[in-house]
Image (tube, each protein chain N blue to C red):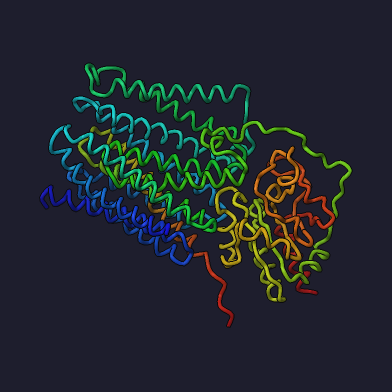
Length: 131
Length: 475
């Protein structure tokens, strides 16, 4: 039951993300007319993602809480995406430098985070079947 | 590629990545599916990065390449080489890097808006301020946690008079500046021509100070709560970045991280008998009620040798091992696994009872035991195993203390009264492996150690257990 709810919420999140992608595009096209709509949709995205996360993560067993922390940390290093734009867009030199530092910091988490999560998960083994 | 198709590709990549993250976390609900789930999430991440590199705003790649190369050069060895025993530090330091990236983005975006007519506007300023305040305090807070876990900052709570008032004042100052900036940087008349940069810098600085003062009064055993809370802050700051730059994947990923840290914080605070409000306002680790602490005077403990312990453990049918931070400090997990295998070979059954706050981070004991090749179906949570102590011959406590103290159930005057504990006292006999009679983190005597059925086996856990193993082999 809970898993069905979580799946539905996940699907809704993806759908809303898709919708607001359209809004964001519209925002840059027209000036500020759709701005508030885009912000409201962002709030929806946040709420649905947070609920989805809540539903799923409460079901992660304590056994895997450390890998969970490592994993969510790696995932939230998606801020790399924002850092890339700041490092590479047409901005003053010092802002590009700040962007480069941000890219480095986020990359440490993306690369290190996924590698270490996998290393941990590889260690969790069941009892071998008796021969 | 035309700009429209490029933008569409970026959006599709982001949506696919969001789905991959959610499905990846769902994989983590079972040990069998966890690895595949995280590989899916990693693939989603790669897709999102490639999508972003095609973004039309990006015109120069030098800075990006430098950042990616430097980050990989540091991140890869950190992922591959950090030993499992250093995992709490590793997690703390990764929150620091994540928050650093987010904070730099926040500052850069704020500065960028100085050149945009009308400024960021009130709504974006709310997000930018949140992002920068929570990012900055997570940077220094995580660094402090890292220092305490690594041992170059004292693990003892550092307190001084008026600490709470000073902390509150700094916090109110930062929030006040944030509100002022929201009011003045929203694109009204005169926006962009005032001292906004100075005030924004001051706000960031205050947030950095908050991170230090927040973690300063927190002691070692409270670290699971702090690390979880910083995890949540780092996620929420990433989500705020998404609001600030209008990027949904950041909102989704940040919300997932924020929710995860939030849940872990609640679980940890429950397991430590702290109210959630207590945790939320970072007031943990403060003054401890020095209520009627029972003194150990007139009570005696029974000390036994490794040989005696071997006799009792060697012939036991049903053994439950209770590991604690002491096991991690002594690096005794391999000796523990050897002992468990030996008991099983002799026909006994061994299970591990793991308290939620055993160790320095959520799940700490599980990772250490998994590393030592203990199968995960031997590891049990508090609720799963607490009834089983009644039917067990020997409960073997290794470096755990407060989480086994029966006073949490029986003595309303005890500072830890109400905290969920492992019912070790229900076992037929109890053997406690411990360095000496020092009290646990709560600073109170553990009644368990003075029970008739309890025997103390003093010494370094690793050395003592190896001795027990060789004694059992000789039985």
